[in-house]
Image (cartoon, rainbow, N blue to C red; front, side, top):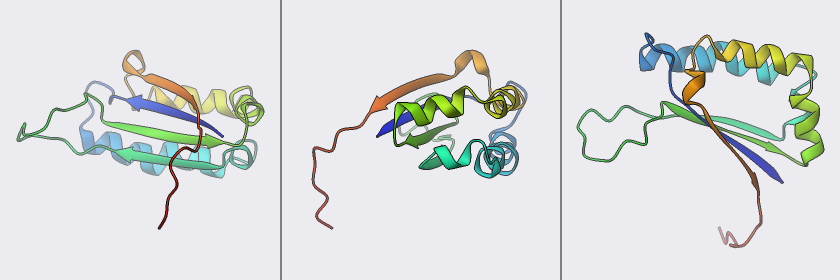
Length: 116
C-alpha cells in the first residue's frame, strides 16, 4: 500500500474558512468524481486543521493535510500521469500556497495489530 501525504498552507489573502470551504466543496469533488482518477485511489481524506489562537499547543504551520492511499505505485502513476490530474494540480493554485506545499510518499508496512 502506498500513501501520499500532502501538507498545505492556504493561499495568501484567504481566511482559514475560505481555504477549507474551497478544498471541501470544489477541489475535493474534482478528485472524488473524476472517472480517470477515482478508480485508482483506494482512500482519500482531507484533514482540516483547526486554528490554535490560544497558543497552548505548538502549531505545525499548515492549514490542512491530505492522505491519498493507493494499492500500488502503478495506480499512483496512472493518476499522476493523467490529463485530469494536471487540471486538478492547476486548481490547487486557487486556494493553496504552492511554495509551501510539502509531500511525502510512504510505503506502509503493517507492524501493529489492531485488536478492536
